Image (cartoon, rainbow, N blue to C red; front, side, top):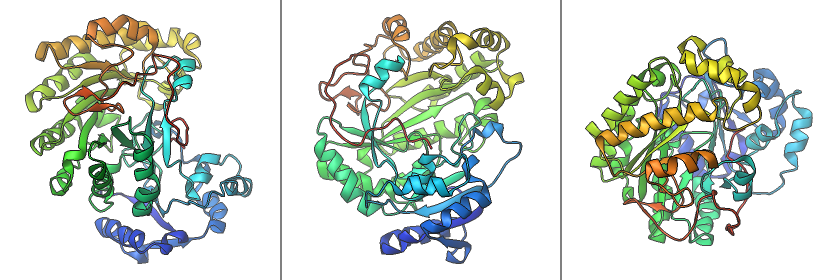
Length: 442
């Protein structure tokens, strides 16, 4: 697992009820060169004081807004299945002003265990084309410190994975026979950073193998893949790497594997028999972005034979948030000026800060670069607008309503579609039931 730099390590006392969870914590501590002597035990009643002491009410800010590098806070926790979620409201009342309800739920162990991400009607309302699918949440917080992300200070790790597999994973697979491929923590963390000590991929691939036709995504910016060679059911895995250019990975995603390291990790996985796919997400148009991203695409085809390649320009923020978090001098000056001029137009849109014409130009260039190497590999755009799909679907040779997606719920190895589901481009499709919510961000 990653050699995390930590300024404090805590354990919620509920962890002691599960010997397997305690053993998992001991393995992870050993991986960090720590012991239980380095861990402070907390009760739920201690949380208001600890939140105030470390100012966790401000822990979830974009990393680019921080004046200096700060070591992580690590909390070992356990999913709380008692359903008394109203306790989070009381914790919020007792905690410092500005403490978010999602943070309170997380610390109390009430993570949204099986999220129905990209609810169809929600995507219709916000002009987003993706796939509705269930994903599992066991960690909130990420070690990668990407400047555009707010999940880098506090890492809250659920340790009762065997109970989670029995009470969440297996029932979700049983209730949703239509979904063949499942993600873990794709928004708020990157689970392979904590392997093999964490043991999630060993345990959850066993569940997938029990069902026979299910797969678990590795959705990652990490190069920590050597442990996969020892997994008995690695045939249940599909590798999906979020990619950027080499300079972007070094400067803007400083805790993640560099783009070269991610490509090398994908090469290793492909040699292990794990299918590999790539998403350029988020694409950040810095100075010289064309040459930089073209070089990364060259690397893809030098080292691997990808099943799919996808694209998504930096989204989810307004212009002011972008220039506050990212080094403004690094950004392409023409696109920066265009985004500045369109700031009011893009205000409140999840597609911001870059307007349609910028995103389209970026996509067309990258599509062309991929097609220089491979005329037939399936392409897609991720969480994009209906208008972008109508424009670029024919260019990519992809259907907006039923495209092969890097981490789609029905996109099994091959790649091929399994089942009759459609993307959220199409309205009014009956979705299977499960706890719903958008992503897992805190």
